[in-house]
Length: 146
Image (cartoon, rainbow, N blue to C red; front, side, top):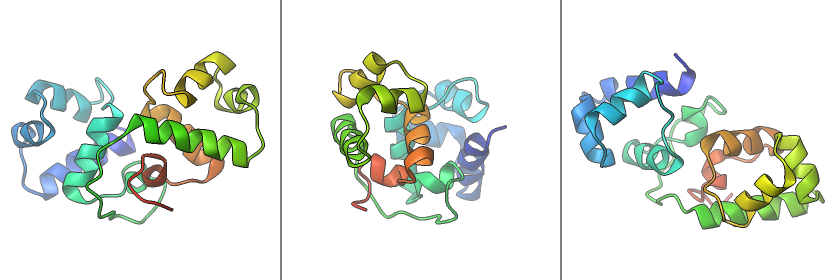
């Protein structure tokens, strides 16, 4: 069990919630939620943010990037904002799309499609960016301003 799946399971249990209740809160089927807890599927980013918002948790805490547990935010995930932020970060680091794509293990065209909001960012891509640039996942998803 990965750190993330253990965290969402433990959070649900610590809050005396059932999988059915969590599924209703997230607006998904119970079977879909269960698959996230048992790692059959990875939660899409917008659902991860919805989960974190419900419990006021930091995304960095959920993915073991920080010990800071709480983040008081109710901002829903906005892919356009994240795309703008990763472009800004890349430019601040004086990297081309090709170079930043290589660092992330992506072809330039694939990276460009994320940056230009032509493709929805995944948590896997944002995790790589967070680890490489030392920016918070909460910042990269627009939940906090710094």
